[in-house]
Image (cartoon, rainbow, N blue to C red; front, side, top):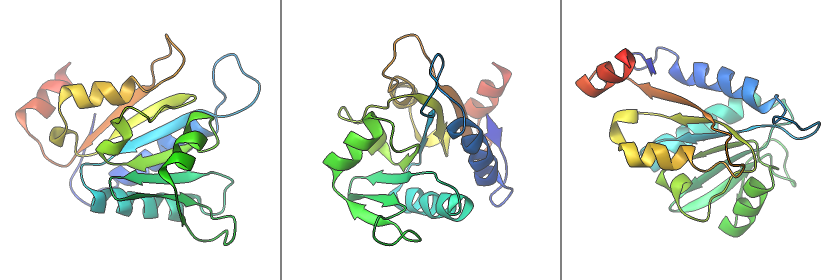
Length: 169
């Protein structure tokens, strides 16, 4: 659990943690990387985090995607490597499932049935108090390999009793 005021650097901590995950190999494999899923409660916040991750990783060979109810984007674009491009949901789901996309930022769309990760190593839930227990568990369950649980980072700027209770546990 990461709790801090607005502007205290929670997104930077999430980005640094994500970098460590996407540069690591899945257990028992000599190629590929682990994946990160970053779930935000609104499309506006998901788009902001997508743009932040692009700014943090634009000079590194890391594919980043955005999935929301209104559409999907991928960075970098094949035609313009310094920009994101709109892509179809079907194509995004294919690339996430085969591990081509290392970081996926999104809304509740991340926990929809068709979204499957190849090697999910970290699930990040921003504003965790706005999601229910079932939604957080559904995100963790997106790992395709049985028996491999992703790490979970929950972030909040709102000190509420449930958040405090989670920190005690």
